[in-house]
Image (cartoon, rainbow, N blue to C red):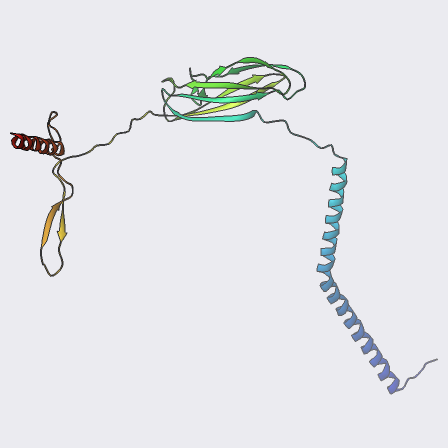
Length: 245
């Protein structure tokens, strides 16, 4: 059985199909645009979530770790000198017993050295051995007699070992300078002069000495003022004799 439709009904069906097609296209475009706009937001959210999870994981692991500490440095303290050859320099080290029991201490020093090797120069320590009660302090004197066995304009290093309950080290640094003696040269000749200009209306200039001439006298010659006083006293004595005579 065939069903016949009129032309009006056919037009309505075409309009509906066209409307549905346009609506589908519009919906598809809207979804695509919303995804493009929301993608950066979603990426930022995922990145933030990933960072939060990572930080939580690190914090959780750290709470389970055992905290570690470092040992003291090799050099307990540093002593530096800057001196010349054939010069003697000194310094002091205070050693304190911080334990609750008495302890014995022994000190020894190494020869000074640099990249060229060891030298014959060695620090002198006094005292080099002693015992300390709990809390006591001992002052150790360090003396370095710089001889010609070290070169000028060079740096040298040494160590002082302090052996108590364990070993500690005091690091020494020495810079050797070449010994010098101050020197200057004075040239002495004619007395310097200078040109002095007068006022512009004088239209001339003159030359004058910069320093007063020095009046030298013999070793047995008395100063001029003393001679004048002596002459005046002699003159008065002569006048009195004439008056009395």
